[in-house]
Structure formats: structure tokens, C-alpha cells
Length: 135
Image 1 (cartoon, rainbow, N blue to C red):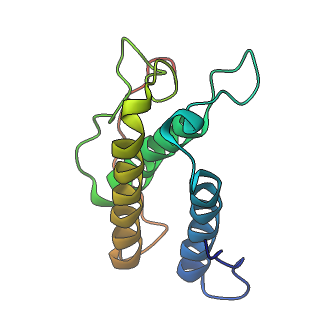
Image 2 (cartoon, one colour; image 1 turned 45 degrees about the horizontal axis):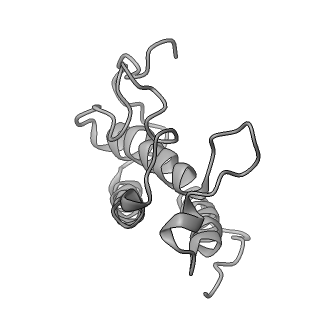
């Protein structure tokens, strides 16, 4: 898998897009070629974190903090609920892997479009209540 280089000197928007691409690519490279079961392997006990969980968590972050904040749209989390704030990381099955990877890529694309088209990066989205209890 080809690796995205670290961004060097650009304007603020290009640096943001470059660093996002760099870090997204690093995670994609770690997942590349792994089976669904390997994506679910826990990183180190007692942690529940796996590469699949990390992908799903970052999908939530792309959606809520980038796409939602930019588009000012629906703020309903993708995986997590008030009853299960850790549903992006805990209770995963191998059958979730491909759909989760595809959703992550889609959310990354949506975020990028928003970041390219938003007028000002320092514009603030309207204040909303976090969808996660206690945060």
C-alpha cells in the first residue's frame, strides 16, 4: 500500500487535509490485508480496543466532529447510543468489519468535501449538546 507523506508547508486548509490524509492512511495501512478476525484482535488485555474498534471510533469522530460540525446537520451518532456509549469499540463481530471500513472511508470523503467547501475554518458550528452522556 502506498503511503501518504507528511505534509510540509501549505496554507492552513491544505495542512489540515494533509495531516488528516496522513493519519487516515496510517490506519488504513495497518488494516490492509488483514482478515476480519485479525481486525478484531484486541490490542492488549484488558483493553477492548481493536483495529476494527479504532476504525469505528474514528468513523464517529469524522461524522460528528467534522461532517456534522461543518454541515451543521444531524448529530445522531452512527454506532453509539445513550445506552451503549462504547458500541463503536465493544461487542464487535467479524461480520461488521467490511461495512465498518466502508463507512469510515465514506465519512472521510464527506469530511474532506466539507473541509474543502467551508468558507472559513474558524467558523463555529452551532452549540449542541454532546450525544454522549457525561461528555
